[in-house]
Image (tube, rainbow, N blue to C red; front, side, top):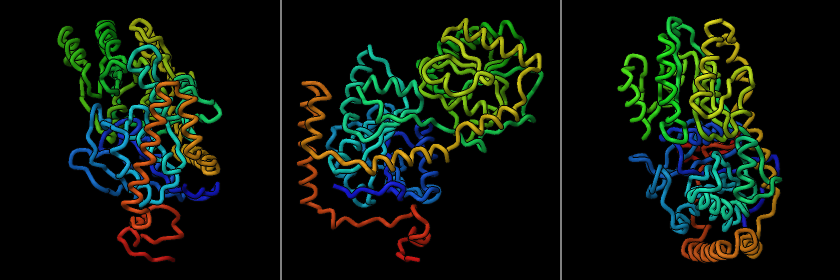
Length: 455
């Protein structure tokens, strides 16, 4: 088993998820920003994900953040296929080579994240998991995912959720002890999302939508809102950023009601382009049917827009009442909310974009999120890693008579496979990587180029 790291000391952290740059999304941004702030705080951080096209092997990002793009096959929606065992040789080599002490996995949808948790426990490493999503309990997909989550988290050291609603959901889905679940929200870099009055046209009212065009984001609701409000307000325009299978519905609405000059579909947006789209609008509309947190409304508010959103999941926790109009997930309720925002805009009673931005930038900062996450790392560093017999007992007692025994067998096979790999290639013969991140007092930047020079 790995040696423990005293609380308050630098940790060697491996972030694992199928979702990372160049793919764009909330999880990708969270992993990157959190990693950068942890590096700033003196920790060693690396990211493990799967290859994206020609981006494979080892890459270095800002501040020496090392990213391993592994040659694993993608199954669906950027999540890798898994047999549970095939990733062990690669992940074990990385964990040993980088002297990893804590494995931090992200997203219930990521097969690689669950694989990494399973292998890390077999190797005696501390584990942390961040859940970014909400799930139901009734449909077949949710039942299977929740059972997998129960197995994956029953012996994980600590779990992080992005809202209190998300915590309740995860605790129920995975039958967890609430004491090992912390709430640490997402954040936004306020310097990336600033208002720009020079780009606003007061002759029209522009409603901005920026999300993936999928069912979960409520695009069917949006298709009902657009024609109703465009007929009522001739000066109203819609600016829609994002791509997905529901785009065809919006194109049909635009065609049927001849709204080509009032509804613009921008397609997929790069992260650096989101702010330039947001500042073209006055109101931001979020029609999501489920959200654990929703970074998009924070980014929009940071740009000074009035937010109108469905009252679902963790959204009511994100912004204060004076910065958001909450509606039920129905066309009528959302239209009422938008009309209220339009009336306030016309009357000039909305706070100025600069005022809104200055308020929002104080709510969520990545440095604060990193500090709170660091406390979780300090806590798990003091915990004892479960020996194999206790881990098997927990799997069998916590996960049910069938699933528990099946995964207990998998854990035994994984342990034997690890023993075989250690016999074939002992840990001692695996080259230790030169740190490109971590405490600045230990290494100079020349380490990045492979020269070992202590100060």
